[in-house]
Length: 117
Length: 116
Image 1: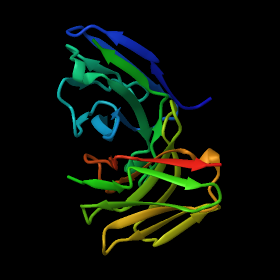
Image 2 (image 1 turned 60 degrees about the horizontal axis):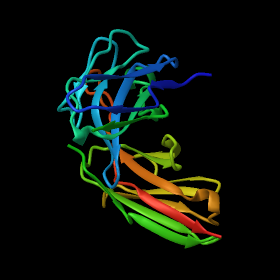
Image 3 (image 1 turned 90 degrees about the horizontal axis):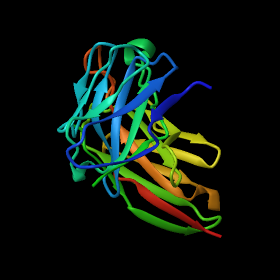
Image 4 (image 1 turned 180 degrees about the horizontal axis):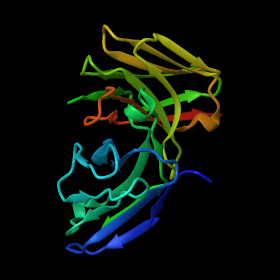
């Protein structure tokens, strides 16, 4: 079934530890995104990638890094986790405007619930 | 950058009534406005979207209206049912080019509860 797979589903992490959230899509979408969701704040963009080999900063990038070595994978790394990074993390993908020549809807993964203690 | 505000934050209606959720955006260059529904513990899923060259779009019980002059857009759900209970998010984006791409800015969400 085509879609986005995120792993792990949930994780409890000690502050100061390093953690990589995985995201893989099989829809051949050029564009991928990482959002965090916090109660009352909606979905906020952390980092994005318009195409393999390129990344950009979103609204709340501090403390996070990403890489885009190929079209399918877009991992998000927390180098040294802090309690304020406790959140639900959603990976998403979409057609890039150069693929579709129009704004394309986001397709979301099931999310990773991360708790930093 | 773009700022999207969404109201109300919570909305409770009786089954069969209509529900309206409103959003405003700040960047007049925004040209794409999707709405997502998120059930408890699930991923957000697109329910309807509208582009700036259209003033209204309808899909069965769901409709979206856009007022570009006032920079606001609304979601209308008619004949609400208990399964409509969820969090609804509006969003706005600008169709970008090779480097800027197209990135959504979301509102804070509206918790809709439909009481049987």
